[in-house]
Length: 76
Image 1 (tube, rainbow, N blue to C red):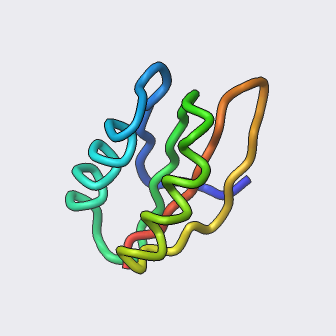
Image 2: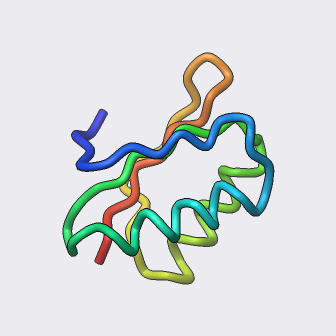
């Protein structure tokens, strides 16, 4: 897995909260930094793929680990 600069725990949150919190944290990061998000909402996979395309912040990697979804997004 990638090395993150910041981590966001969005476990237990349902749409749209993981995306809203991600947007807030990304706004605090510098260009090129990586945010790791941990979520449990199965809809988060499609949500983060769409978020990445809409905001142009690359979704570098995502995986499912023990029922949790892990995302790595890089701020442009």
